[in-house]
Image 1 (tube, rainbow, N blue to C red):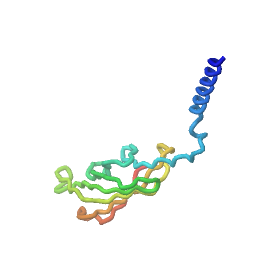
Image 2: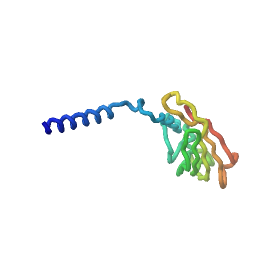
Image 3: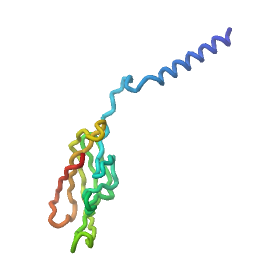
Image 4: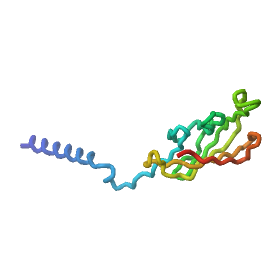
Length: 146
């Protein structure tokens, strides 16, 4: 008789554990996690905390590299890195890439049309912290792809 009670207790414990594991996450009492916010590059790839980011999609003559992110949140992301810009002298195919230190800020999240379950940053702002490319403002704002 003692063996039967032990067997019943073990079976009930196992059934309870299985039932608890089968409860969907949406039924939990925790609040839902916020939508993940990504940066979308010109090839429609989503990235979180990218190490590099292409700005000039047509010719590749402007790219952010060595990016380090100090924050990446639901409303903005802040980092620093290098902006590699082709000087196009005497013309772009013969030009040299020059690097400029920048701070980067991504903001204005919106629903990404391609993946509505994701938010994506729609604006990128660069601030040149040392020198800057000729004919370029100290602060430049780009509208990002959707």
